[in-house]
Length: 347
Image 1 (cartoon, rainbow, N blue to C red):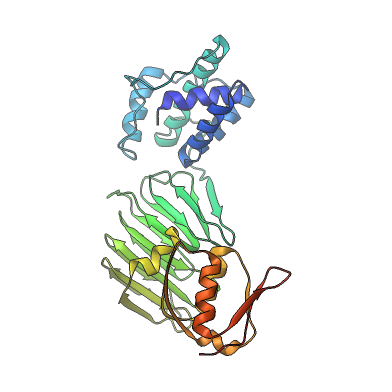
Image 2: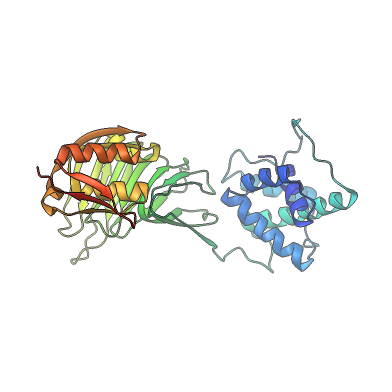
């Protein structure tokens, strides 16, 4: 991202001179945690009418900040030699002043965040961000270190707006697929109610819904260390996984097993793919309800134990219901309140 472009659009936004096309571009930029937090800080300073710290020297500060920030983001640059862009923003005289002020404010912010020279506003306070999804929803998130997260339905991810210089820790409730940016100096740690997963840079899936009796960590690439939460004896059992291995923890018995897995069966949900490999209808219904945002009821409870074996690739809800109906000899209908009701059938 061009830093000049961000500040120009931020200045236009704050001075109400931004066009609809520019607003759409700006909204895309602030989807990144780093930019969103920076714009909140700039807005606060703009509304207070505050000037940059008089101790701040633009040239030396810019060079120092860039060196420090590159310790966390190797690709970061303040564009000392701007590259040609396909279009140019035309600024009014007032806007040129506004953009310059924002540039100085932004520089001071970045220096405070990564170097910590501003005594008036220490960077010690951690700003937390939380993303939650409802039934039938998914969310793609890029964290401040470049890690990409796809959050499944009915899930919550809590993380700091910026990670510390020693670790990267997040908290998950539900299910998420992680593509962790490599950083040998700062491990990436995911906390759930029952497990702690620690990596340096890898790809994995965690499924840890509070209402379910299993917590599962599945490794796609790299390596992870999975540590159980402390048991009654105060022990903390840990395991190392290699690619295509998953650990399944039974929350009730505290017994865990390491097994191999089908990547599509585990992580296909992010691409609307489902592999049901001889799993009970009860579990299939939970997955469908979560993915499509529907309620499913079964009149004949005995069919909940019927084993379902099928594979779906971007299929509609109706297509999946038809296969379930055929496999269980049941019929289904949609009630007036929207609930899907299965009647009859048997294994």
